[in-house]
Image (cartoon, rainbow, N blue to C red):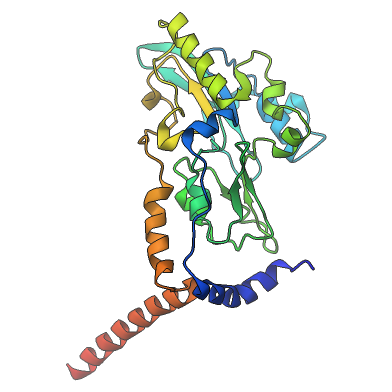
Length: 299
């Protein structure tokens, strides 16, 4: 029997009671070395020409089967910095080399499909899942619209359908999960004319990236973004400049979930369901407000 979204919220209280049966146990993770066989994409920004065909392919696959390729030939969009949103899973932006102001490079951005995703850890109902093959996917039925995933993501990728009043969803790249199941490459990779996007097993992509850097040290910065950042990501990047000059954020090598989950597990460990926890916070706030009012009356 399929339960509608509105029923999920109604049943949330009942679901929380089931937590009293025992501690909340984190889903068994996959070690970093095991992710080397998962799918990934290597982005070589030095050969990206900013054609935006990846944007067109993504739009056609995920939003509009009749998307016109000609609509994506406009390069004037690079004058304004853009971010992926609920209507665009990927966008291409320009970045510059401070040492060569005249040099212009382009970079595609989308969900990074982290090895240990903060969005998955932040989701309290399991609407987001890191699959064993690499993609981080989303189950709209489970989602309650809390948007914790948006806050948790260090890359600020998940977008919310604020204009959808009835059935809003979290929207983001899925690494073309459905296409992968059919044995196909992600649409953006398939559409890239310059092989700036290379699809394959993450371990092999890292080997290729290191080989490129060793063979052309004058062309590439000796840093593969995503190899170690926050525990590693499925998308890996090569550039000719320091990544601080691109839009990819400077992040630590340790993953985020082990730190944030300590807080969540600390709450659940003592059998405190979320509703009871927030109720306690509300009671504390109410008590403080009452005390303030009493003090005003006494004065």
